[in-house]
Image (cartoon, rainbow, N blue to C red):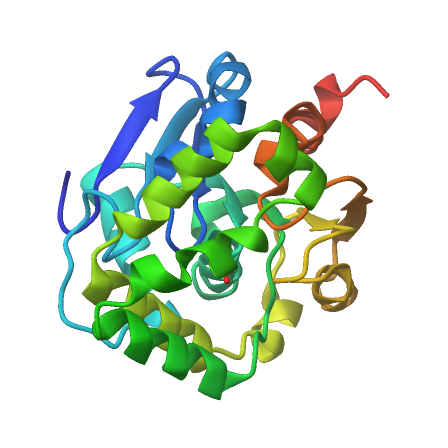
Length: 259
Ligand SMILES: O=C(O)CC1=CCC(=O)O1
């Protein structure tokens, strides 16, 4: 941990840095299906959002601006000037903020199962209140149901249990703080300022950030490419690990891509 954010590092110390941002209620461990392949090519830094995993948990509410500034502080502490960034859901929201507000720090950008505007705000505030009242465990099944398709959940109960455990281990103040950040977020005006070549990935069966949200992001970012994956819900990197790894590898190093 340096500053407020906990992080892990995999891969060669002299390789280009790839920063991975995870979703609400998960940690950097969310990216486990991709790490081995990505760490062959990159110094992979997985951070936990403020209020998540091993990171500090100040009392909320938080904002996307605050979450993004904590990531910039992490890069400063690591003496890293420029990175590739891939983020899923809340991780993608922070990625959009970084690419728009600190374009000199972001080389290539990948946004997975995310949204620039994710209402209704009242729903996020109600979720935050429930979690602050100690009810994260009682709403966890409903949240996790949106992370995986029924077919995947039926055939991978251990994986679903592991991700559920990550969710219920999230500090209540941290989870609620990030819900408030999503409630107050509207990144749409920022998107036209993003100059990083951007891959936007939606998942056809994602009820949390449906593929239309991915399309709306891709439309507004000048150099974006949109891909919609079949056979995955919100945590598409878990449900379609090889496809997501391939998309990331090809996007981050287009010269090396074999199509
Ligand atoms: O957990 C959810 O409900 C889906 C989600 C929205 C933002 C995020 O990171 O996850």
